[in-house]
Image (cartoon, rainbow, N blue to C red; front, top):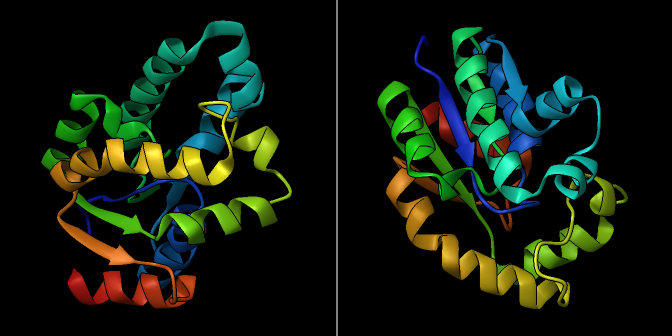
Length: 171
């Protein structure tokens, strides 16, 4: 397995956890783009966005994607909005396989509510209720995820290990 596998999808669909299990199953290096960006920026995503804005964050995200590919990471858990830049979709599709991890908005909102790091790692994007935000942004990004993905996996009722196994079967 030499081609990178990119996991895309909205917040809390399981990208990072699935990436960990997938990389173990394939015995390859993996990276979580959000955590990598935080390490290199030496601040949380929330702090970065507050200081520099969303456009600067998206630029950093694009540069980080390019860097981690050069570093040889094979499994890449992306941030939920990586598909908002067409060049990211092109890069991922041209260099590897893209799997859209998807879940119902209600599942995502429930997972977000249980995530103790939600306010720090996942800053609010719209300033509305979690479910309203999830529904609105998932609907807006649906065509972008569809454009990016080689395959879609619904994660609502699957464990992260089962999702990773499904990806392995698809490779």
